[in-house]
Image (cartoon, rainbow, N blue to C red; front, side):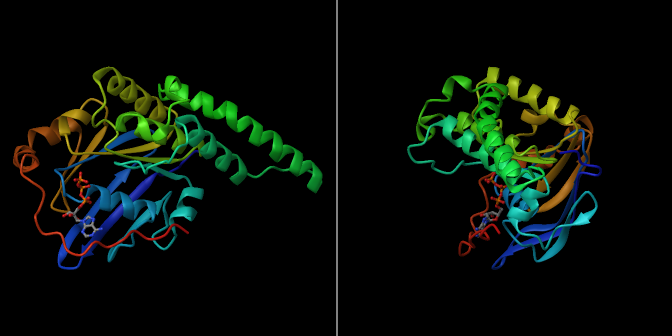
Length: 273
Ligand SMILES: Nc1ncnc2c1ncn2[C@@H]1O[C@H](COP(=O)(O)OP(=O)(O)OP(=O)(O)O)[C@@H](O)[C@H]1O
């Protein structure tokens, strides 16, 4: 799905009781680029991703997709408009295999696509063919993210890095315009992280706006065109990776510190609609 302007986030603030988890944060993730969102544990990266994908409503600020304000839209509507996401900790998938999960995502994507035809019967037949194609599409995606060998393995028993790659394959099934990845490189062996970096660059070259949240600046130095540094909920630096690294020593020292001890009552995510 091509995107003209990509993603723009302005002045987002999220509070959990007395804790301001995200504090007036803004960023842009243009199409054709990989944008990094880095910051220490507890900086607010996941919360900001939740706001972008519609899982959490901000107290202030706006999320714009292709210049259109989607702040009031629910998660499903945003997904339909091209925002896809992977999670830091993929959900427990029961006894399904890795391949089942990606096939289900591919089938969902095919069902959501319009299947034009002259008559209702025509449309039904095209839709059925498209669902059959979903299996082939899932196999392609598993190969593309480099985990075809894991297709028949139980999704609950694979390493977390592989589970995140399976989520990425599922997210790509929807052919998104904007792709958010929450700590996709954490825990991956070097060979897989290099392959994932190449894939993220390829996806950007295909026109996607890719946004990568990471707590380790060094991990994303080589893959991002632009970095935004989030510290205690605020964007404290933004720019080309080398420039940001040069000015970010204070923030990196924060990365070594434990996450903030204050954790008020858990505020659940919004139900997708
Ligand atoms: N549901 C919630 N209820 C209350 N506080 C929360 C909730 N989710 C996050 N927080 C708090 O908001 C702050 C930002 O958390 P967030 O998970 O967004 O940070 P992060 O940068 O993604 O860190 P990590 O990499 O450790 O996940 C933290 O202090 C966290 O404890």
